[in-house]
Amino acid sequence: GAADVGTPRRTKEIIAKYGFSFKKSLGQNFLIDQNILNKIVEAAELDKTKGALEIGPGIGALTGQLAEAAGKVTAIEIDNRLIPILRDVLAEEKHVEVVHGDVLKLDLAKLLQEKYEGMTGVSVVANLPYYVTTPILMKLLEERLPLEHIVVMIQKEVAERMAAKPGGKEYGSLSVAVQYYCEPKLVCTVPHTVFIPQPNVDSAVIKLSLRDKPPVDITDEGHFFRVVGASFAQRRKTLANNLTAFAGKERREAVLKLLEGCGIDPTRRGETLSMEEFARISRAMLEQGW
Ligand code: SAM
Image (cartoon, rainbow, N blue to C red):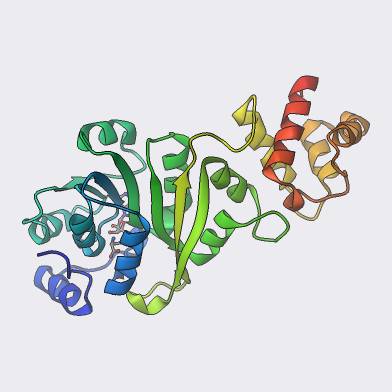
C-alpha cells in the first residue's frame, strides 16, 4: 500500500531506489511524519463521497493518506522525474490519478469538472512549494473554483498573515484578500524536523473554508482590492495620506470629507480597518467616480 510512504524509512528507501535528488528551486521538502500527515488529512473533512486535489505530491507521502480518506484523488506534479516514481508507488490506488503539469498553468476549472464526476465536493490538500504559495492560493481563490476547503502546509509567517485580524502588524492586503473568499483557521504549527530536507523557515497548516458569498457588499471587486492595496501602500502613513496618493493630490480635502462621511477617522492606519470599512470606502469613492 501507499499509506506509509511518509515514514522516514519508506521515504529513504524510495529516494535511494530511484536515485532521486532534491531540487531546491522546486520547493521540494518532503514530509516524513505520519502524525502531521494525519492532521492535514483530518482537517480536510474527507470521506469516500469527496474528492481531493493535491498540488505537488512529491513521492506521494500525503497522496497515500489521501487515497485512504477520499473517493478520488488527483495529484498535480511539475517535476517529470517524480512522475514514474509516483505511478509506481501509487500503482495499487486505482482512484488516484497523477497529472504532470504546472498548477499555475493548468485550467483547474476544467480539471475539476473532468476528474470528480459523482463526488459531492472537492477540497485542495497539499504541502505547497513555498516559493509559489501565494500565487497558487490566489489562483485557487480568484478563479472561484468550486472547492469546499483548502488545507495547506505553508510558511508559518504567511499562514499568520492570512489569518490575521485587524489591528496587528500581520494584517495586510493578503489577510483581506484571503478572508474575502474564505474563513481561515490555523490548524497547527510544524517543526523543521518533519521534512527532508529541512526547510529554513517555520511551517504551519492552515485551513481555508470557502464562503458561499463574500462577507461584505461590494459593487466593484477590482476597485475594492485597489483601495485595500492603496491603504497598505505605506504602512507608516495615515489612511488619509495613503488614500490621497491613490485618489490624487488635488483631492486631499475631499478624501478627508469622504472618510468622515464613512465614519472613519482619517488619522487611522490601514492596518486597523475591518473589511466592512474598506468596503464602505470603496463604495463611497465609486459614487464620486474616483
Ligand atoms: N507532498 C509532498 C510531501 O508532502 O512530502 C511534497 C511537497 S514539496 C513541499 C512540494 C512539491 O511541489 C514538490 O514535489 C515539487 O516538485 C512540486 N511543485 C513545485 N512547483 C510546482 C508547480 N508549479 N506545480 C505543481 N507542482 C509543483
